[in-house]
Image (cartoon, rainbow, N blue to C red):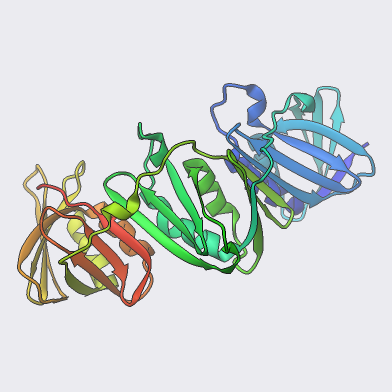
Length: 366
């Protein structure tokens, strides 16, 4: 019996789940997507043993069937077909034949019973949160996650749920990003979980409807998110996230207020001639003026001056220009506020008159 479907109805869920599939696999079956059909309802599941994504679509098929197919090959075939093309899929032994128009594509299958599944333990906390809030938290903080750090708990995003708010925090040891969202349903809830880097990136791709509600289930070792016909499961990083409150600059700070876009463009131009490895840039602050300077081993040099609102003492600070550009790229508002202490202390960047998102950048020696 053939599964009949429209190319567009199959392609969208395939594109959702294929990001979970690793290109290099230790187990061949992890390169496949699990396809389960029951009474016109087709579900697609992909996993890498750490993250699992399951989504659904409608097809024409009256029985039950379960098999696996190479995920990327199936997606590439569907992408190459004309829009709204009709297709059929028929499993014959250890092969599956996809037909559309005059085309015929034969793919090898692997047994569905061998496909691994992530089964989380019983959820200890269940709550709902708007998709827009989750996506905003991720977009404003994920760039500060570490990559392949030996401190494995930094290779992810801290999600902290407290009465009245949910907070996302990421740090790689040189910078820190923190963002809050109001959360009325969290009364009495007090927990911290660390999402792995890949899970954070996939969630950012997956969550596209800001007005929708997502249900989150959290256990001691897993987080599961349900939204519409999609289910996303990830293992949690087992570790203790550092006390991020301790690195927040406090005490006697001086404030610099600048036009966000003007500063971002000046930094981007100056960065062109910075050292490609260290990306250092020199900030020299004086009354009403910020002087930017960068140079590299080839003796190239760039200088820019930006008018700012600054009334503190003159000081010179070195920064990684990439870290500053990352922050200015996610901040809202026309103006950015930068709290500085001295040349050896971290600086705090926020949007003017808004503190729900805060960014700490450590200085560097130049």
